[in-house]
Image (cartoon, rainbow, N blue to C red; front, side, top):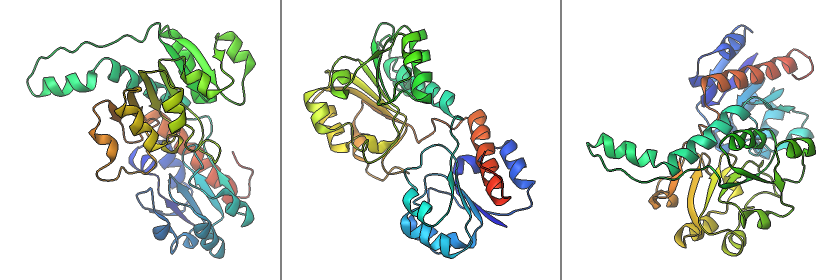
Length: 314
């Protein structure tokens, strides 16, 4: 059987996931994703399985896969927004992902971004590397109000850490774990526009879908955001309307935009947000720790094996 690996996190990080995959006797090819549709179209049908990242697995790619021998799409990671799930179901190609493996490390990355920005660590690092000793004044997060948009696994992990930092917790989600909310004293807002008007920091933790695409809209930023809010996105770039974001930055509504994700990755040249000093971007590394990659990699391989060997998915 032939397997294609496109996830660069999987490829670049040593660990037990490689040992497990290599022990199966598969013929393994690797390409460095995320791959565009035109690259996948002529080759996808040559493989029995794929462990993918955020590749463009469109309806046409699925059709070509079904004409060939593809039996399983195993997503490394959680987000399935780049995979046409309707086409996969129609063509009887199962799609799996790695739920429950990366929430701790993404929550840690959220606070890495936030503390770096508020303590000016990114600026001070570069000043000192140039031989300078300019001491900027930062801010504490203790006592600030945080709005967690999406209270799934990652949102809950952020809430636990935010509580330890002494932040006041606000939340917004359509599905609420009432036991967790009550235990950790999270104030739930029924409307997003109500939440963004009250908090100092917003954490985006939603999945990307038709209903959430561009949920951070021009109307929301222009008419409802509290002035001076910091917006942190460790979920998906498409949750934020780029024009709305630029409006918020230009007009001082947003104190900062800190993101690990973009709507187009890798980042295009001349990306418009690069010119803003209060924008901090990391290249989708929120879950790229040795521990998390190994966990997600093993789950992706286990899901692959279970289908190719006629077992139930892990």
